[in-house]
Image (cartoon, rainbow, N blue to C red; front, side, top):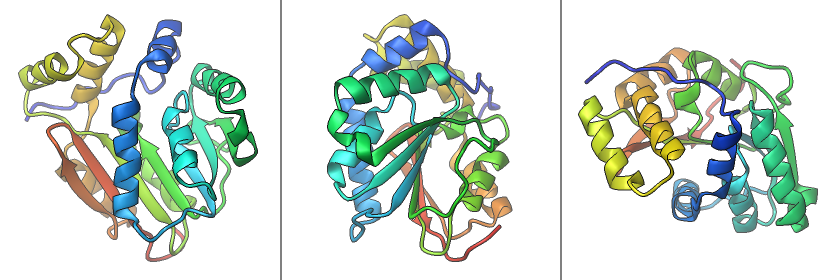
Length: 228
């Protein structure tokens, strides 16, 4: 297993934002919502949900359509991503506006509303964080006993060659900016063992880490206690 190679924490370049916002992630984002439903089959998510690393908002919109009683605060450190999310909300998903608030917020930052949420979710943010303990601290501080937590991310392959093969397999026809970002993200991702160590250090041992397919992992569970 090769050593992790961190990548920039934020996606702010114009070409990056446009490429991600315009790409068709419907299959992968629908799969994320299905995995949430499988992890918490009895939940209606009728409380307030915090989405850390919401990007341009696509999976947030899909979550709201799937769970019509939910309310979401979508947070991203990239102002450019939040601007695109707000644009799509106004032009494409205006019916959701009363249930959704987008916030520019960097981990750690007081800009991220700090209160106990009914659920916390995150998709493809963890591998961007240079100090993962800050991510799990943000999760711990904004959860309470009974908070449902769902974090999906890439997992680091065994070698750079394996990462290159995954790019060829899953992003061979994608724009160059997406191929490069996918490769860099695979190299920046954590292994299951590394994430388990992070959870142990954060005192979030009730959360479970599972490998999904050939390149993803999911961390999910319900907070068993309140407080740090």
